Image 1: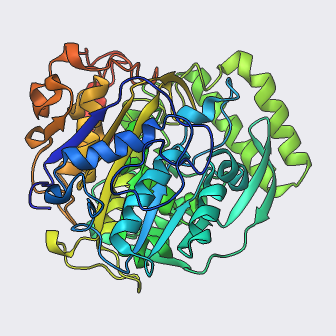
Image 2: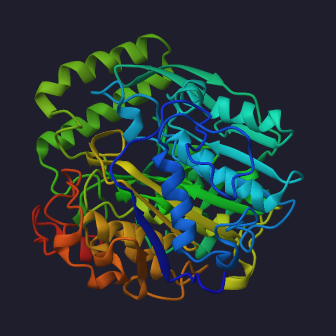
Amino acid sequence: MACLSDRRVIVYSGEGGDYPGTPPFHPQVRYPEYCWAETGAEPNLAYQVVRECFHLAGLDEGRYGTPDWSPLADLIHRNETVLLKPNMVHQQHPRDPQGWRYVITHGSIVRAVADYVWKAIGKNGKIIVADAPQTDACFTEMVRLLGLDAIRGFYRSHDLNFELIDLRREEWTTRGGVVTERRPLPPNGYGDIAFDLGQGSEFATHESAGRYYGADYDADVVNHHHSGGRHEYLIAGCAIRCDVVFSLPKLKTHKKAGVTASLKNLVGVNADKNWLPHHTEGAPRQGGDEHPNPDLKHKAERKLAAGLRRLSLAVPVVGPWALRGARQLGRPVFGDTEQVVRSGNWWGNDTVWRMCLDLNKIVLYGNPDGSLRAAAPQNRKRHYVLVDGILAGQGRGPMNPDPFPAGIAAFGLHAPSVDAACACLMGFDPDKIPIIRQAFQCHHFALAEHGWRDVTLTSNRAAWNGPVVNVPASETFHFEPHFGWKGHIEREAADHEYGAEEAIEKRARPA
């Protein structure tokens, strides 16, 4: 572990290829350290890029190429419980039946990482694969698509303790984007733990309490948990009780956060998404961030939408029917969300990054009794990251992106550093992406002791070796941002597309 610091990120670039198609995704090559009898008949790029990331990192270097090579042995110990946290946001892409492949973490990445985790923890350890998908997603269908059920079956046939957990409390049915049914889900065996960050929250200096909007129609819930000095979150118990969180995010653009990698991925360890502020209602000059410059049409739409949401909650059947009809009629007038900015889906969102960094603080410093450990690096939970960028997503992420075959995996011990490296390789400026920039500047429950410009890369691509700031723009991928972020986060981009920069800088003094 001495050769891999928080400031170093490993990026391995595969030579073309795609994900294997047959679960449980055995490697085609019988690597010396591979400890199972079964191999696959098809190329397995995922296994290759995971293995080579660990090799490039210099982990257990003296035993590389032998049956005893265990690259994670210095990071993860015998008999420990490890949470593997993929991105399982939704199984459906609105335009492509196979679009899930560039929306959610592929099962072959989960399998490859899990194999090396087993080498470290041994037969008496435990692996948990868990996430809290979007509430109208089908966890069972994603488990099937990703081959996680076959992976579980394979490991259990070897008497290994491998669990799959849906962390949500309920699942919804939606029609036309409107919730028509809510079904409670059975509790998992690890419970949920409530935390209050109080003055340690990134919202403590945000003067917009009472105007937050969460994940459901009833905004009173999210504002109750973020008012009066409270900043409360309900976290899945397995994320707090485990010994190690190993994040396996998908590399994508994001409408509210700019990019989604490991920092954003921890949204999936919460147990109630309506405790999470997603945007702040109002214009930037009034401390809001739902729209850069709301005109009369936008304001009329928001008032109408708020009334219809209340009706949908208060009057079953009729309320959702009215809301769905209004959405269909209003789309030609007000525009489709996939084409116009609304609900904080732009670079001026000053809310979602605070929520995401709060969740990272809780995972790193939280105790099972809901208390928080003293804020010091040695007190943080181990949180490692391997990003699935073999088939990434660009444009209208996170749910409706276009595919980007980047062919990479990125690995590191420090989530903010990994995300900064990913943003740079995507062709973006981390200073223009608050979730990354601010992760290096938290004053309470710090997430980093260095700046993003101190991050260095180690890669099999020569141009990517050395300080991340020295990677030439010509050697980056040039991902297309979400349209609400276009013209702002690209390297050398102009910052005034919406003319709201001054208002954002003055948010601490709302009119």
